[in-house]
Image (cartoon, rainbow, N blue to C red; front, top):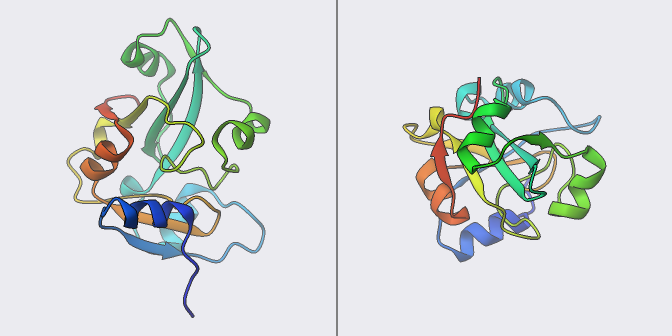
Length: 158
């Protein structure tokens, strides 16, 4: 059966960024990142989650890290020049980004926030990120994603 394209996929098509779509069943809503990696048959080190944070200055930042790792808040704050950062409350995710928890993509947010991809993914041939809804992922080159979102690479996970 043909899966419907998401807005993320349409943006990637429009910008001529090559990608491979992946779809998985999600009968009970969002699933954890390790389960997504298993469902789509990819190494968890290449499957990433998109985390939205807020700095002490009230500026928002996006971090893309492998699903089995955690965001190092101190390293992340240093990377973006903030005294401190914290995760935004889940209730603010949809109004701020246009995406729900478990379906948050770094591509196509309501506003383009400063974005950092974890240094551990920089050398990979491809990474997988959400395609903007639960059950849909896109696989693409980390450098292509970084260029698309105007991001940088830095060691921000532990």
